[in-house]
Image (cartoon, rainbow, N blue to C red):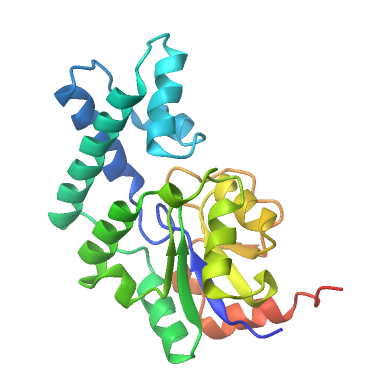
Length: 234
């Protein structure tokens, strides 16, 4: 079946952003008078909860602290602002092979989309910092976590991306780095290629088309070839 679009996750897929997110969270906690510090091991566990505000709430509940919704919203907004500042400082690059895959897809007439749990400001900050261009200048469709009711592993954000593309899932491939992202894409009917990130190595990627170390090992022709091996839906 012909490949018509690639749908990219963001954090961990386009770039190893999670360490900057962790840093931004910790700095925001200090500014808001919280004596929290999320270590790398802490954050690996916390990433099982998708969404920044949801992650803050889950951690507060775990340690028996009550935070009201307004406080969480303001804390997360400051974290997002700080993340953008860190991005603008040039502290991030795309993962190996991503820039080349995007360029090859564009030349081949394959449409590009994003389906992410993160917020649209975080998407814009990453693409601007790593690519030197605005996200909408590269990706035809951007579906972000703040636009859907349920975040990954629910399929909502991938379903939104597919609706905006106007394509059936069988004509697209999702690119992911995590088990939650894979579950989300599969639930939306998407075949999925996984390249684990720093925080997601060792997760269960059952159901993926393939699992690769990085996208430097994969050309657009190989992606098309992988999809061609999948039987047409009945």
